Length: 122
Image (cartoon, rainbow, N blue to C red; front, top):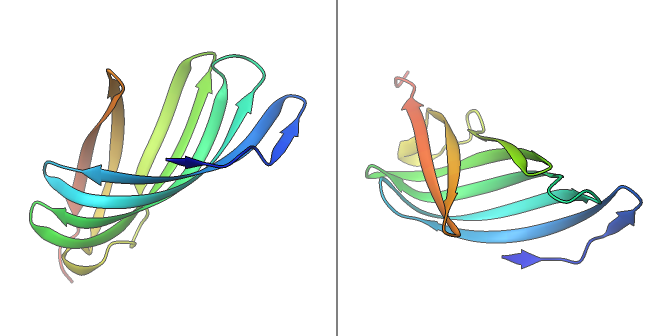
């Protein structure tokens, strides 16, 4: 994770940017690069972020890349998160991929559940 200092600090919220590198293991064997922009309010536990993540690897042995779009909000500690495959962003053997990810944080570790489908080849 490579956070940059906040670039917009105003009353109400500060806005900053973070670059993240990830590794996935399991059915999805891949690495990814994430660019995230977030806002943190003055109220503890309230924030929001958006991010784009390019994933490069294999899913059940099918090789290629795809892009995930993140949108998350936290209201006084209660979070909502959407992580979705960007339509038609998959390449190689992953073409036709669509789906969503959920993230669970356990003991500081991020665990991902990926529900996905492939369109039939045209």
